[in-house]
Length: 448
Image 1 (spheres, rainbow, N blue to C red):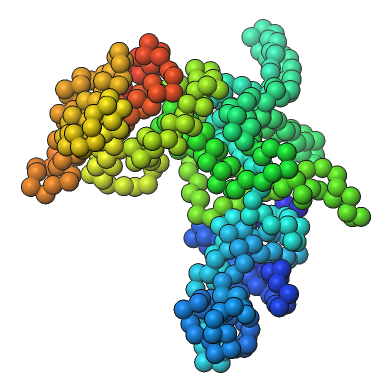
Image 2 (image 1 turned 30 degrees about the vertical axis):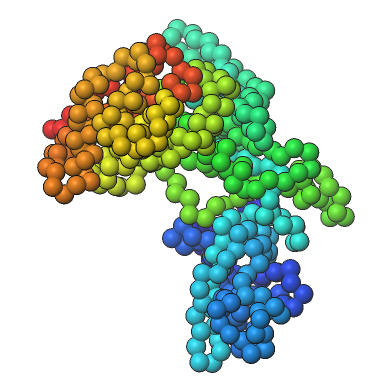
């Protein structure tokens, strides 16, 4: 792969499609990325083109194939694209529609879930052996770097600087798919030799056992769990970047076909939003140092377990989506309501009784689960205001709180949720009480 084998927003690459089917020929096509979608444009020139049927589906009746058994009526899930920049394996392909005219000319649009920038023709990346990602800010959360520095000063002026680059050993994070964090570094000297650039990063890696394969979703779920845990701690969005995938049966090879090492091919996912990378020091409520691998395990279990339905609506609010404040309050209320209901079931309350509990009662169950945490507001203050705002957003006959009051309820809801989740994954009340004092959510937002 070369650096030109990429697909950026707005780019169109003209090349050739290989679908792996004996009945179709190599076909000219266009691979593009537009509006954060990955698409393949596939033209045909006459009524007999087999590609035309991919976009008609099984709902259309064909006299030459009445039971739809002779031809394909949807694209293969994996396709291969080739052009002068290299090869791209297209994974998760599906029909997104077509356009035709009276002259039998047509253009079909294939949606693509993932692009693997490399890959050997015939190797199906529907499942993979390994997956890697980079989360900017991970080194701060891990409190681990590959670079150490030693300074010497002469008359208060820097006279000597020694930089040592050595990556620490990988850090196991979870037994599932051998999830680990792999600190690494790189450096590059400019063509003129007058500038040296040093980069540090932490690679998140998952791998399947031995020669087995796993779905993309199995890998991505664990990577997203780490990203979301950092988001919970800082209440800021973090990206999964520099995605790479591995199949052990598709290694790097020399010209005669001899394998020369594992291939970690760059990956592009469809519809992924890139958020601004936090600049400078990130203020975390807790770090890996506070949790350890046991805390990671508890978070993955909590995130994917029975509480997931209550966690998702509130956790989603750390992503900047431009949602109105009324919707944010309702969304956080829905999540906390769900958590309170599940806590009632944990307390051996019958389903019928738990189902009839009012919203305020469920909020009090969440508060009770916080234990001895020193919060910057009282239980009654939070429950009364949050329940009133939540019910006002649901019922038109309730008086809507002011924007300032809604913003305050959102702050309290989010802080209670963050502290509740932190308690569940093993952080102590004493530590959290101290960290809350320094957290940006400790004080109400001031309106000028």
